[in-house]
Image 1 (cartoon, rainbow, N blue to C red):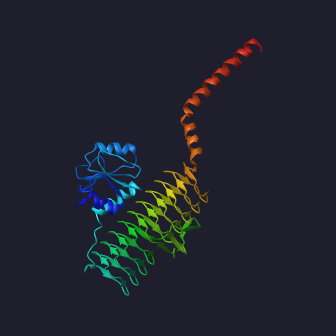
Image 2: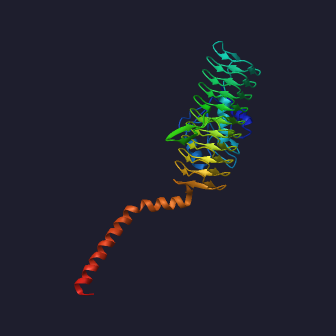
Length: 348
């Protein structure tokens, strides 16, 4: 598959600076660029590297006015690069139909052009929207609904009554709707609190591989529109993840916590129960949010327990100096002790 620079620029709504007729055969990173490939550069440093590479064309910011190579000038190079990748690597659409090895329950309603792969098990009263794709070995519980153009990759499990919106992608091994971790102590034992709620995943959400999203105790665990959940994330019962928020790998969000709109939680973040992250909060990697903590809108926090990032940086800088400070204190103690001995000897 190949396109001319002019055709790519039209797709990206960009402007060509150079030879529109050049044939482009691939989208590449700068390090792996070859003749006939297109790369992207967001700033002068990467533009210099791209110009020194074998790439035939560079996707660059509109402010760039000259180059030794052909340019496609765009407003957002990284976004344009993503669209260029999609142009050269369009999503594969499985053939519509139900594989004969799959088992469907009673009163299942399938939309137009639905694809259901091998060894899928679908419970009763399930609704699957138009053009949805259900990969091999998925299990979909009773009363679930999956919106149009959504994709469940292999081995995804939806427990009963999970509601999935349109254009949702759930990657392999994810489990949605398993019981929330709810127990109450009684006579030295942990007694299970029945988890009878459900999970709602709204439109345009992506859920990574081996993610676990627990059903609510009574109401709903909710992942709002446009949120993106990385691999190996745990979202507990009654959690709400806000619109367009990003939750990075190995993060755990404890029960009844709320993540606002447009938040970013770095890798291995731990959020205690009943915590509230208001809109546009950024949480650095491995930070710990204590239970019932409220992080105000727009704050950037780091550390465990998480504090405003500038305060945490000062604390970490001070901690790095601790060995030297201890040596200084030890030397001062020794000096004071020697002075005390001299004072006693002189009768002072």
